[in-house]
Every structure is written in structure tokens, then in C-alpha cells.
Image 1 (cartoon, rainbow, N blue to C red):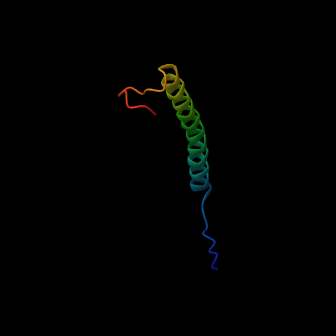
Image 2: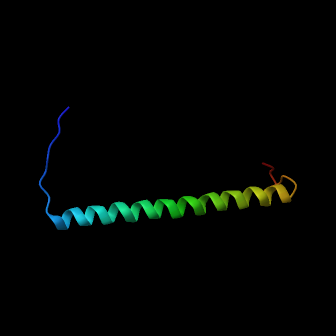
Image 3: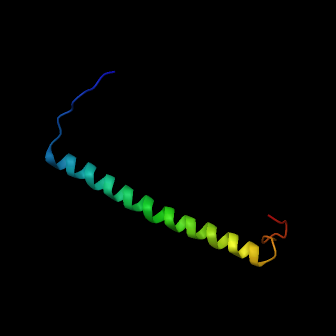
Length: 58
């Protein structure tokens, strides 16, 4: 295993931290929304008696 230490200035470290924070919050928001969309789709199918939009079943 090889570990390299690359010197970074404060500005580049702050940029990397900001990108990491933004990515984390974005993933959290989109993941929750995706889960809600799936939950709503499942509820919708179940309310229609197990048929989807194309009437092909589950």
C-alpha cells in the first residue's frame, strides 16, 4: 500500500469540504424524495386493485 501526502492550500481544502457537504445534503434530499415517490406509486397501484397505469398488473 502506498500513501501519498499532497500539500493543499486552505482555499482548495475549503472547496473540497464545500463540495462534500453539498453532495451529502443533495444525496439526502434526493434519496428521501425518491423513497416518497416509490411509496406513493405503490399506494396508487394498490388502490387501483393491483393494476398499474398500463393495466398489466404488478
